Amino acid sequence: MFMTTGFETGLCRDTGAPCVLFHFANGWTGSLVMRMGGRTTRTPMASVVAWLTDHPDRKVVGPTQASADCAIAWLDDVRMREVV
Picture 1: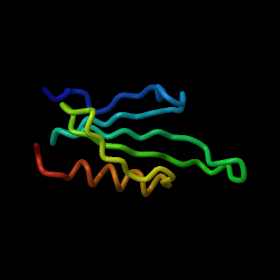
Picture 2 (picture 1 turned 45 degrees about the vertical axis):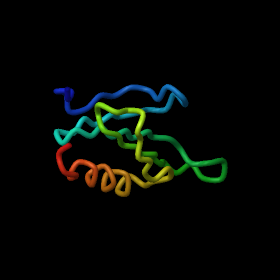
Picture 3 (picture 1 turned 90 degrees about the vertical axis):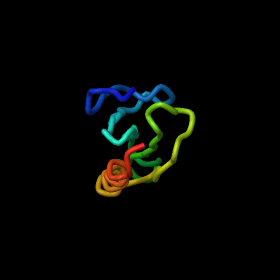
Picture 4 (picture 1 turned 120 degrees about the horizontal axis):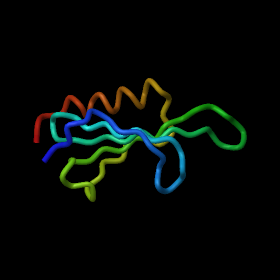
């Protein structure tokens, strides 16, 4: 059963960083975790992952050091996948 809410916000269980879960109508869920860059740069970055909503154990890993535009574009591609 697909969730009816479009998105949820919270903190990443592993890192404590801000996280947004997107629940797409096509049966996919995407996760965007926001964080700052490494020691030499404080540039904001994002990591993105997607999975079939009913199968969270089968993740598709996207970019792990993505800019905002790159992360949103990747999640938009997930949103546009065929309905499962």
